[in-house]
Image 1 (cartoon, rainbow, N blue to C red):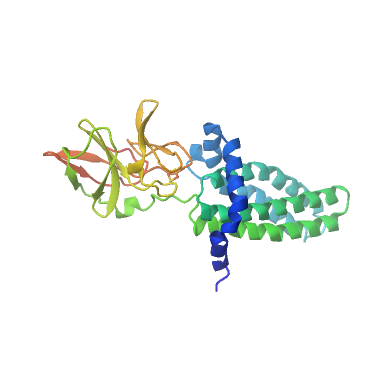
Image 2 (image 1 turned 90 degrees about the vertical axis):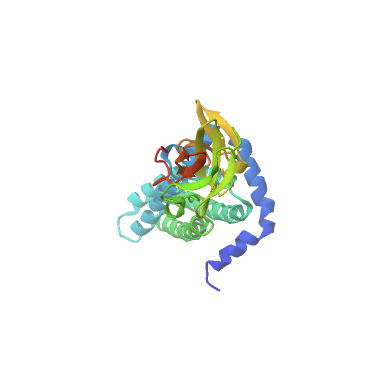
Length: 293
Ligand code: FES
């Protein structure tokens, strides 16, 4: 058994749902402002926010731990712990926002990740208190203990991202496997007007939307967690025709796959379309976000 296989056991432990589900419900109850939620997910920057902020927080703690090994550096180490604790507030907020839109197996690992981080932060609060009272050796010992716990928590965070694909772009492969040349996707006549439908084009599935003679298509898989976009609802954002994901409500502009609302941070894969002799032809855009045309 490899060490990280044990994390899969955490993901399969249904007993954790007794804590994980109420935690998710509480976050969803508190996080009702869509604009705030989008910022916490990282929609405005087009990248999950939590791992970026985590670097500031955990990086400060790690640096403090190293400085504590060097003579006469306890004061900067204390300052770094203060920075890490301040940075932990938005880091945690962004993490809980992502957690609230994850599936159950991720939430089980996520709740243990959160518990480890809460234990780590508690340790650093005690460490900071000891340092401010002049008991720097005691503060360093608490800091190293907290760092060890936080490292375990960080490993779980890495597993969530790399193994369980939380925050990963689930539409990344379309430009690699979608057809580069115009490829037949059926007749125009077969497409219902104003209704998303699934079609196969080459090796991939796409969602196709017809409005009159106007055809727009996106990769079928939602970039957030692979929901079938053809099961979503068509909607309108600021005059742009969009589709809303059926699972967590991300909204993508049909024109180019742009994220109009999170939790997704990566765009859906756009497939430029044309009609030739009554037949619809599609090809993959070079890269999601490149305007279809
Ligand atoms: S799968 Fe989560 S928003 Fe689409």
